[in-house]
Length: 408
Ligand SMILES: Nc1ncnc2c1ncn2[C@@H]1O[C@H](COP(=O)(O)OP(=O)(O)OP(=O)(O)O)[C@@H](O)[C@H]1O
Ligand SMILES: [Mg+2]
Image (cartoon, rainbow, N blue to C red):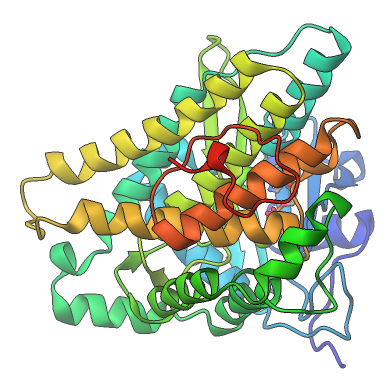
């Protein structure tokens, strides 16, 4: 494929770009003093940190393909526009919970934003906590209730401000049209809602799931649940979403006065969809992290991680409840909660039986992995089929699909 805009690939190109758009002066009085390091970690884009004596910024560029796959997997780079649009709104709604945006360039599909390097990606911290606990090292403290509170408020404020209830029909319809993100929605359909539930070359799984995965593809209850989730994903244009709110889209650290700082980033999958999707993705990844901690023998850590789920729900409900200018149906919260658990289910299933797995599980010691894999699979199945919470307990039964440990 031909690329008709210049891709940033090295230090000089990044510094040259920052000079061109007038941003290098905020980093150094002499461009020669600016250093650049690449921090690309995900699948989709390239990210660089440019730093000088006066300051630093993060520079994210969307290539016209999936970065990890290369030009043979083209995808619309305008996704960075969806991300910028979401941040524009979020910067006003929850400024403390998102990075500030310095510059958006929709010709070269670049966004320059606040450098968050002082924080850690939550997923990395979750993995590290279990590894430290297992090795007998001190475990860093995370206030999981506080993490859930920030994420719940993030989802609450974003969904409320972009809901039909608050905007009215005409403005909401305009938002739906402006926020279309077709190619990334298609990607979610493929990797979350389709491939994990049928035989597909992308799928792989731990051998302890052989029997379960063989049953999954012909499991009528699961297939019906997934069809429901898909219907909601495609048709429930309720509010603007983050769209990819897993533990790799949250950073955590502390402020200079030692209070916990939680930042949500990477809303490039943003579109107008079912509100429960964002909560469900977050719940799923925290639940997986809880199961991982329990499988490694750290029950206290496992329980603490579950606090994030309940706290995010409470914060979400509070935002909607406390706003006097909107009215909503009696069953609104129940509908969001059911959607959330079903989305948690498809997300968890793809993390054990789809393409992109959870580092929390992949990093477990080999003796802890089978029970964790099975517990995640069984919880995922329950969430998809029932649309309700399931206790995150381990199972002794290596084969049963109806593991009593993971059903209420
Ligand atoms: N503002 C920032 N400050 C510091 N580091 C950042 C910033 N934004 C992103 N990063 C780093 O770059 C990595 C990739 O960023 P991001 O998740 O936005 O890219 P992505 O290509 O969209 O990822 P994915 O494919 O997982 O969606 C992050 O995990 C983080 O380590
Ligand atoms: Mg991304």
